[in-house]
Each structure stands twice: as C-alpha cells, then as structure tokens.
Image 1 (spheres, helix red, strand yellow):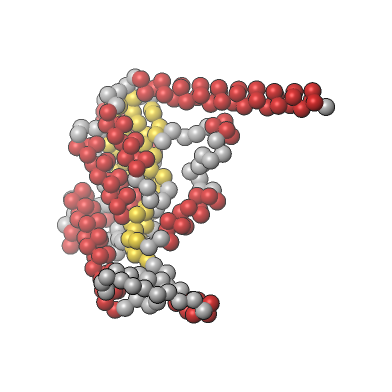
Image 2: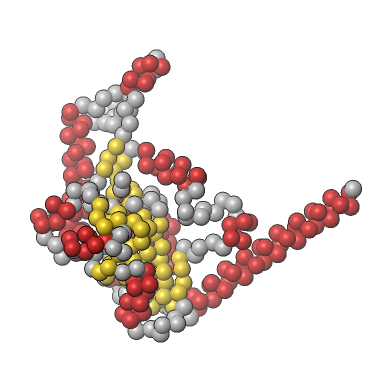
Length: 296
C-alpha cells in the first residue's frame, strides 16, 4: 500500500514537472520573437480599474529597440476616470516619441475604452462594434430605508458640509447633488476636449453625439469618431504597410495569453473571458463610489 502511495506521488510530481517545463518552453519561444524586429499587439481588455499593469507594459515597449510598431486591440466597456486617462496619456506619449500606433476596436470599445483608443493615429472598428459612450457617470447607493428597518443608524462627525457627500445612510441634499454635478461636468469637459482635439471635431459639433450613447462602428464612422471600418486583420495589414516591414514579421502579444498548460499550473490566472471571479471583482469595483468612463 505504501509503495502505491509513493508511486502515485512520484507520478504526480513528474507530471507537474513536465507541465512546468513545457509551459516554460512556450514562454521562451514567445520571448524569442522579442529578440528580433517585431510588431506588438497590445491588448486592452475588460473593465479599466487598474492602469499600472498597462503603464508597465507601455514603458517596456518604449524601451524596446526591436519594436517597429504597436497595434492596440481594445475590448473594454471603459472604467475608472483616472486609470483611463493614464492609459490614454501613456499611449499618446508612445506615439509622440515616434512609435507607430494603430488601434483596432473589437466587440466593444466604449467610454474609457474609446478614450484610450484616441491616442492612435488610425482607428479601425467593425461595422457592429459598440463604441463611443462619451460621458461620465457617478453613482452611490442610498440604503436609508433598509437601515431604518434594521434599526441601524450612522452618526457622522465632519469638518465641512460636503465631507460626507454621498453618504449611503441618508438622502443626498440639493447642495450635494449640485456639487457632484459640477465634478461630473468638469470631468466630462476633459473627455469631450480630448475627443474633439484628437478627432478634429469642433466641440459644439461633437456635443450632440457625446451624451453617453453608444454607436455601432458604422454610425461612429459617420460621426467622425473612428477612421475606417475593418477588423483586426485589416488593422494588422495597415500597420505592416505603415511601418514598411515584411509581412512575415513576428508579432509579440502583450499581455501574453496564457496557454492551457500555464492556466493548469496557475489556477489564479484569469482567462480574460470573464469568469465568476472576474464578474465579482468587476461588480465590486463598479459599485464603489466614484466617477467612471463606463458603459453601461
């Protein structure tokens, strides 16, 4: 019996070792393309709440002497204001420093996702891509009635009238709502200004389209929000022609998609498809008080 247990443990350890070795080889094969001239496919996927991983990747791209151009693929409904602006700013600096930057919108590139794409020199979208949603939303829960039923109250000591604006334990006052509206209006003006500047549209002409609504790619083209209709392959072909590289040039995908083997040995790795843990994390971030470039 003991022999069988030992044999089983040895077999399991050998299998894990084999899987780890193969996963490492996959990673090294992908990394080898970075040692020669290549193009980068930079993926911006899911709700935008943490900009730091994206900023780190873009800093690495900026230092990469073998990178000949970047194709940004956006699959995002947007997210937090500050993070969306930081990603947009980093992409814009990348382009201003001479890096060719083309953008491809997938199924959805709305609000903060659209904002990030503004940095590109040419924006592609599918006819049915959902994009636009130029606007800002600020929400906070009010559970005063629920607390009353539970016999719970919240005492607040504050230094100023607006210090606890958005307090979930009571109704917001008219002054607080005006205060929040002023914050939203200023944030919206920033978004509107960047869209107008990057797309060459007069702000007054843009405003009727910038009421938070989403557009299909075909509608966005008519409104001047994108440059052309086309999918990922069209954007790839354009970047290849734009940079003058050979068609068989290697592509380095970042963040690098994990293989099934890597996911097997790293159960914490997110699939990017939106599993239960992703949904819970997204809902948690979405329900946190704050202003968002987010659709819906």
